[in-house]
Image (tube, rainbow, N blue to C red; front, side):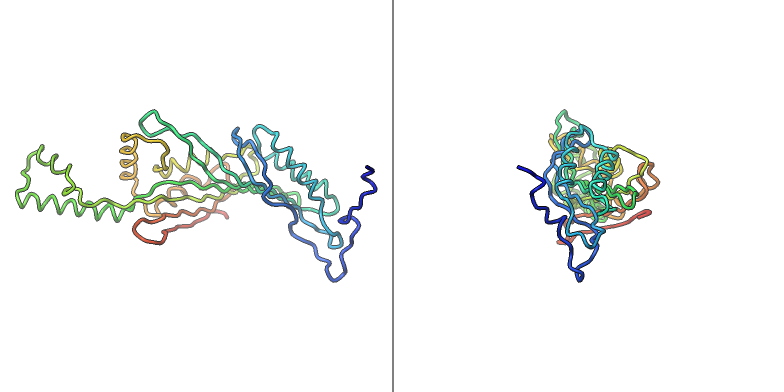
Length: 301
C-alpha cells in the first residue's frame, strides 16, 4: 500500500474563518503505560498534550505523541531529563504548529515497609502525579503525592486523661484501692480505670512540589520518607500485637491537630534543596464528626 496516497484530513483541512482560534492544549488522556520510576515498575496513566498555535490548522498529529511516549517505558529508571527530551521531541514533530508541550503521569508507587518492632513487612501504595511542561522553551516539573498517616486529637486526649484522673481520685476516696503499687497497677488494668480513650483517625497529606530545575532524578521516595518522618505516625501494613502497641505509643507521643501536622511538614520542606515551592493540604477524616478537619498552606506557590 502506498501511504503517500492515503488522505490526511488534518493536514489538508483549513478552518473556516469564523472558527480560527489557537488552542491551549490538544492531545490524549489516560494512555496506559508501564513506567520505571525509582527503579520500580509503575502501572501508569499518561496524559500528553501540545498547543495548537496555528488557528488555520485542523489538528495535531496524535500518533507522533503516542509513539514517542512508548519509548519512555523502555527506560529502566525514568528521570526528569528523559521527560524533557520527550517534550522537546513532541514540539520537533509539530514544528510550526506548537510551541508548548505537557506530560502528566498518574500512577502509584509501591514501597515495602517493615513493621515497627516485629520482623513482619508489607506493601504501601502512594498515589502520585508528575506534571512536566515545556512552555516557550522553559521546562518545569511539579510532583504531587498522597501520604496516609494516623492522627490523634490532642483535645480528646486531654479529656480522656481528665476522666481517668477523676476515676482514680474517686476510687481512692471510695477506698476501692489503697496507695499500694500493686493495687494501683491492678486497678489501671481494668476498664473502670481507662474509661475513656482519645479518638484517632486515618489522615492524609496531599503534597504538591515545584521541583528544582537543576535536579534530574524524581525524588519521590525521599519526599515520602521525609514526610513520614515529620508526621511520625505513618499507617502500618502487617503487624503483631507488639507493633500495634508501638503504634499506639507513637500516636500518644505525637498528638496532632491538622494545623500541627501541616506545620511539621512546613518545617521539613521549606527551603528544601530539591524544590522551589510547595502547596500542602492535610485532611483529618474525623471519627468524632461526620466532616473532615483540613489545613492548607503554601510556600512560593
